[in-house]
Image 1 (cartoon, rainbow, N blue to C red):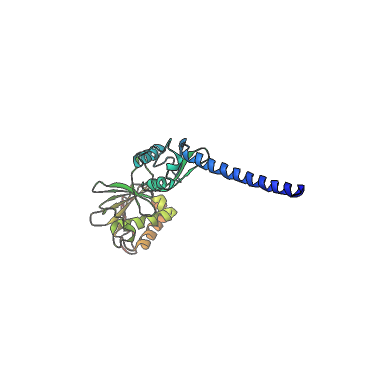
Image 2 (cartoon, rainbow, N blue to C red):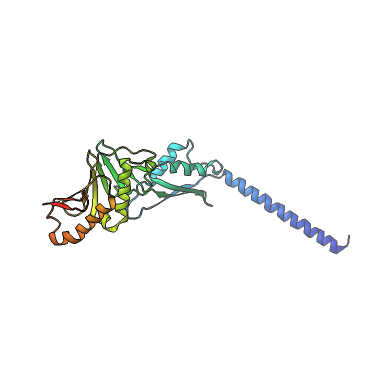
Length: 259
């Protein structure tokens, strides 16, 4: 073997040796990381738009994890940490819309949480008190924060898991009515409370003034709301907020007011 061929041969051996060392180092690093211990748990909760607090806090998240895992996640070996299960456990909580968990290079368990947003509070005659989110999902009240959303009171049937597919179910009708109110800037600014009487008649309580607005049954929704908007935009500026105690929009093509 001449010198040139020998040099080429040794060069190839050197590259093979380097490659084997790199692979060995990689396997060693992977194995070392698996037996490494988690160093911290970092929880980030995205605030809800318009709220200056959160419905769930870091302590709540840590308590959920502590009650759901036999082994303490903090200080646990990385190979034994089930990231997907962490997400699944947290997403079972009514306040959590989505949870993303991951391990970073510093062995920190990072958890990013987006909250469910309450759009209405239900306080019925049987003492049930809860929120609904935009998808009609049940949310308990929070010990940390009271959301400033429209309140529905009175004779309301209980929440059911299949609420959104129910037809002619009063709570579903009220939920749809709240969506209509929220979608319109005027109604959203006007109406603070919705009350349901025992016979199913609906009444509104405005944010300004002391009127009771009689809406009646859940029928002819848009014509009734249109009459209400015309009345408040055209009559109230001239008559004043305090002149009428009752505004009745139940009947077709009529607005009946009582002083």
